[in-house]
Length: 123
Image (cartoon, rainbow, N blue to C red; front, side, top):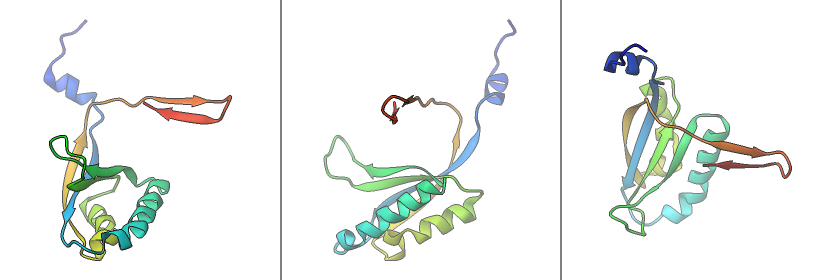
């Protein structure tokens, strides 16, 4: 078997660009009023295949989120920024965000589909 080098290992990796939006509060009151529109927007992106994952971020074992993270599938930075800007939290000025390009190389996902009860489990 040929010796693996960093170059040969890297060549077989996924190398898929995704866009990570990290958010933080910009203003206090009003978050609860806009939350339904924000969640609806996230579900819409999910159904359109543009949302890889999203959720709150907790720091140091805390129980109250201090920010959020949204991972988007977008063609380029301009599209990712357009999607982030359209989030109702960002559009209302309630949250600020930072956009990062993330190169997904390694990892795994397990999905179990049960025909008997038509359920799916992601593990």
